[in-house]
Length: 161
Image 1 (cartoon, helix red, strand yellow):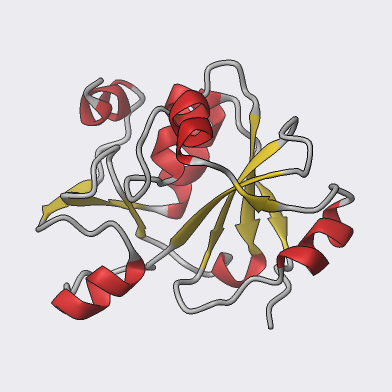
Image 2 (image 1 turned 45 degrees about the horizontal axis):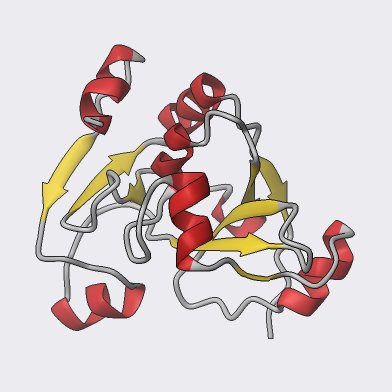
């Protein structure tokens, strides 16, 4: 899928920055890739039974307390979803995850959770379904995108250690 063409069809035309593969936030730090905007850490989570899934966007350095987040959201023991689940629900491999992968969740089985600490952010860094580029998605374009995919963002205080 050409995500940039899909975005353009929704009147979303973000900047695209090409770069070497950046599967993790630490890789971006090591390469000192300097991009304007708000960097994100994307965590694909599942409940203990594998029945519910969420994509959590938070700031890169945050150490999320999954046990506290589980209690807060009323989910049974949150954990990281497997690579197989990531492919099945979001259509991407580990290291390529971003909010843009929700375009592949046509059955709307993944909830979108956004850390309240990102509320004042703009030009959010998102992989365009590949980790060799970054899209700078404005806050208004992020909301337009989630509206198009049918994913209502849940802004929440994300507990950390």
